[in-house]
Image (cartoon, rainbow, N blue to C red):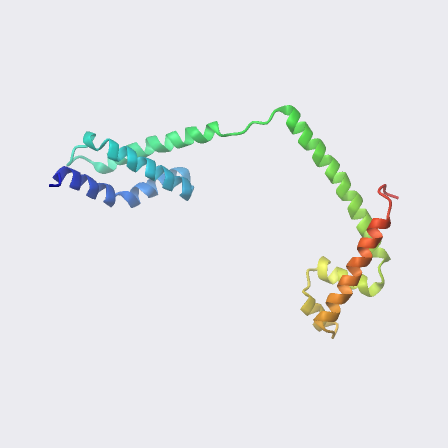
Length: 172
């Protein structure tokens, strides 16, 4: 035989799931975290069911338990914060500066090579990659086929790769 108090408690827990979730979500603003905290809250509520008196405010009691679970969640998140030491930060900055210099060098090489392309290839590269125009749109604009535009772009890219590889690593 079921205990009427247990049945009533289960009904209250079930009825309040949406409100508890909304309350928790309003405190953490992360649906996944809110679901996890709700599950933890339900476990605590179930384990402490003997402390709840039917006829008192289930909402107040369950929201208080949920608020403690939210605080516990926030405490655990604070412990997960990573702190980098100064040496690591300096290494990251140095690496970023090296990469920025390398990027500028490669960009200069590419711009130099683009300027050396035949006019038609340079215009195709500009339309396709500078303006983001689709191959179909370029073909329509030039009254050509998409296949011929694709082939012309392939030749232009091949010329660019060969040119960039042939240039020295130091900027001229």
